Amino acid sequence: MHLGKGDKVLESIQFEMDRLGIKNAVLLSAIGSMRKLTFHVITETTDESVDKFITIENAIEVGAMQGLILDGEPHLHIVCSDKDNNTYVGHLENGCEVQYLMELSFLEINNLSLMRKKDEFNNAYIDEK
Image (cartoon, rainbow, N blue to C red; front, side, top):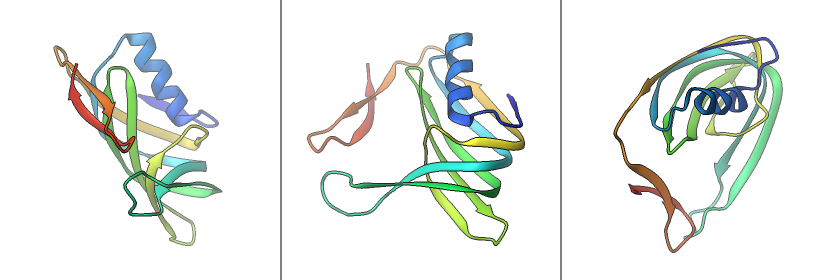
């Protein structure tokens, strides 16, 4: 998958998965550049997740992104840095924008019956459908 200048990263991935009818896949590789990064990180070690949402608008180089598409829903994490070599790591959110390009490679997995469920603390885990 190729994304170009101004494309929204997560929204474009979701659109393509829906368009192609892909329910389950593994993100094998993702590299590129962004002008806007939106992600979240956990901030506490409590039973229920307490998240901090962060938006960075800067020249950003994507070093790695990984994750799963399960039951049509992407869950992706990113490792990237800005021009001052500040490193950012976290759960990708809607709103990220490509600066020049982004190349992503997915491997579709057929006949997989997995989904994310919530535990008693409202935290997601992978389980069979």
